[in-house]
Amino acid sequence: MPLPRKQFEILVELLTHVIKGIDNMSDAQAQALSDLTTAVTALSDAIATEISALQAAVTAASANIQPNDSAAIEAVVANLNNLTAELKASVAPAPAKAAS
Image (cartoon, rainbow, N blue to C red; front, side, top):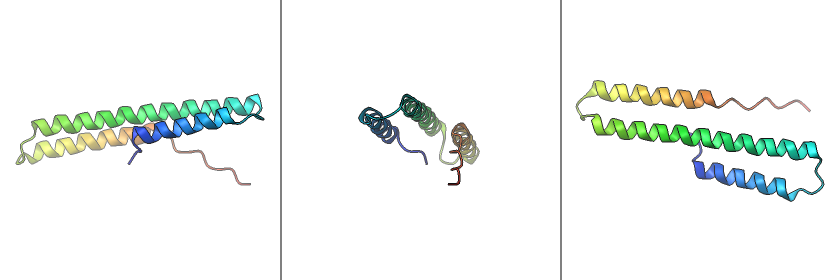
């Protein structure tokens, strides 16, 4: 289950403080951390968008389903599973750590 947007915002804020707090950093290192912050922010935004889509789908589905309409319930489940799969596919796995 993805982390809520608030937790990603906290992570972005923490990374921003780390970037600002390191004085003896090379330009390349500073740029790399800035790029990391940008990537985390983009990931946070993408996850928040997908969470909103899932919430909207659940809300729309609950408004249109009768408790005894199993076909409609299964269609909603399939739709939610598709949205979840799209979210998972949109987040690339972390690169493998190099052996040291």
